[in-house]
Length: 377
Image (tube, rainbow, N blue to C red; front, side):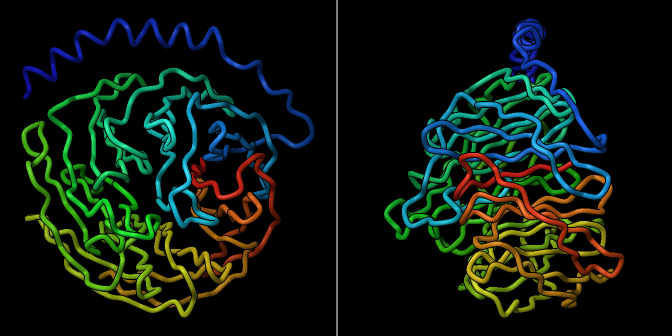
């Protein structure tokens, strides 16, 4: 495994550097800035089935967003059967790793790599996902993995060389889920993510086994099979890790938020679970000691304080526009941005010191009704 990986890296390195040079030459012209200066960026994926794009926004000091550009991915979005405001029915379909931004093209079975240049994107590569309907991405150090939703689900791993992805065939795993289970959008896997130390890959399967599948990373390779922890009826969906390493997940089956420990042997142990009292609780974002879950059916965000041991205490319920889906927090932890898929909007909120949210406004995302995938810096 080590010998093969080194050979692949060495063979691709020169092409990677040349590729970035060519991509930079074809970059979109600089955005003309007017008015107030920006202090950060937000990137939003449209998942448009006729042509996926990433829309960039300048983040201003007051948390409001100003559109800066639109960048086609070179692929197509997808709409899983039964989905309405969440066509991918997943979390982390758009991820950033250093200067690179990676996006899934669910309708083309591909991944697009961009170089981030301020609020601009330079499209660098489009590569196959080695499966059907890629919906989620995970990145850690020089590793990137994609989660494919259809045909029983699968994952595929790549070496990340300055944003150029090199597929490693030995890093492919079939999940073995029931490909005929319906409705599709609740019975396809939802998310893949590394644990904070990079030692494990976690996949949530939603109603198709209602489980956490945990693959271990050993001596440069992936375990042959995952350790499966079933949480019957919970339907685990989106998740993130808190600063202490607890896994904080939304549970669509019970409309709850729950905290877990990922154990060294790959099992997952529940710490706490709290019902949101809302409908379609599916997406999770964590910042500092607070977690927010998106309730697509209620058009709300539920906020929780995370205790040192992983306990969860309800803080607030905040209205949003219709179709509350994927969310992201700015790098400074001051602002939360959530996609509201019914009309293709991003709602803007300030995060107060007590974990409550104050509405700032919203922006329209071109061709993004039902879109998912958001990254904030």
